[in-house]
Image 1: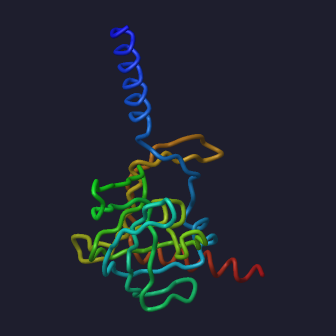
Image 2 (image 1 turned 90 degrees about the vertical axis):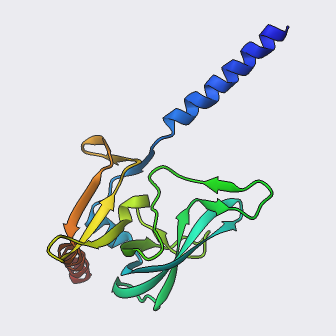
Image 3 (image 1 turned 30 degrees about the vertical axis):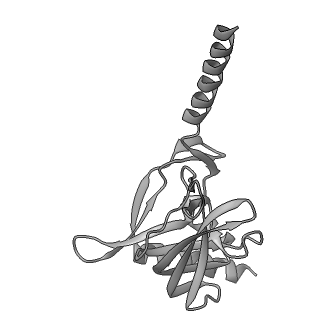
Length: 191
């Protein structure tokens, strides 16, 4: 009897470990910059002024306070709060941390370009397309601003081509802004 229980315990542990190892990526529909521009209620650049985790119902989220530098779409206040999946609750007897593979992350002080959609359940905007709608703005070796995107942890599904694992890309910030403005201008002209 003892051996049977131990075997069941090992089998259960193997199932848990096996299922955990397959959860290394999140699958999302691949969106172009134009798709995200059309879907977004707000498109902004700014700097993260602070981060805090909070519970929204049974979901732990990180709230990033963004000091808006420019709004390319929508009427953004000078400061907005953006909800990110996961967070840390260190105030419990047993602290809890929740992470999502491929979820957007923002660091304090980071300069960002964000495609944002409303989420009524969270009562604040979230990033469009999971990590696809978040770019980090950095200066290249010539001092020019570049928007970098890290899609690691995402499996992207493109209806025409199948699946692809997310990867990093970089684009001059001015090119990304121009693409967004052109998309929004074309869409406004069609109405």
